Image (cartoon, rainbow, N blue to C red):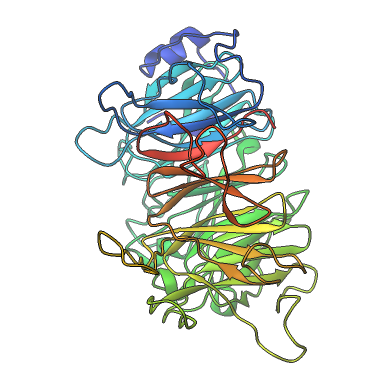
Length: 485
């Protein structure tokens, strides 16, 4: 097993490192599309003349240029943009026999794949250090010699190679790389699934989402990359005790200097008891969990100054308002970080409770549009699919909700109101185009363009008969980013 202690020392020459991982390189610095303001969109299928890959779209004009898609595996999906916007990381896998588990590093300026290599299993989470030098990839099914599966692959973005593997033995023994909770049952392991990176790069949290073990599912792994090569542990496992125990932690965000992480406890929605936000003091050894603050539900969060937007589906689910055939709904919650408390929306009369009802499902996407419209995306929601042909006035409902944060109406959404667009499918990508007050949304495998000033599909003069669509863009799309803003 490669040791995490080699993370910063004794690296092989770049060419040998990435070649040993099955890498291939075709570096380029010449932009081929000629588009100054681009959107990258992953297409996971090849059909006819359309090839799987990362497609380039002109995000100013909603036109697809003639540039060929960027190669990124058989079924490219999830993407992450580096903080310096120089590279885009893409993972290719759909969990089927044709999956290649290929990881691609794209040179954004050259619009080409600089490196490809295979991962030892699927990933649903990878993050990048703030200096854009290193990627950390959670691979919960990675085989590690002499212990249970699960590891974090550490990748150099300059060489395109896996330079270390963060993992720990599964027995209750002293290990230079890890600090264990006590007592540690025989066979304890942490198959890392989701990663959260701090603002300084010296703290990263890892979560074992959907673990069958209560111990593992309620443990947070605090990773300190700078401890590599020292006598201090690189990973410290934290569980809390009694009233400070975690309850299905799934993600975290940090204050500016990484002294405190705010952990999202999924609670009942993930098989636990109570959803909450829980502070974790990172200045102590070991880190100290604080008292969790209950919230209705939380699987994803967006921080805007001191306000945190939380989306989730309570268990049991929230009743839906009148006007929909859906019988199960989710909730959007506003949380004030200064007071560490749930707050009611601005339009709520004093002393009343005003739930913000959204679609149900497992929420994974939250993004603020240019005009104060909050886009909330979920998967596996309760959908309303009309018969074909649909009767007049038939309801269509999918996994996208739009919350109007403004004090004025936007389209048919009143101040503080929620609009559910008439579209079916899981939401897998949301990207605001801030210079134009539009938002690109990938739902049900299709790209839709929403006008943020009316909360409806944008009128596209290039294709006036199909609002919100881009001509000559055909495929099964998964994710979208904009590398130029």
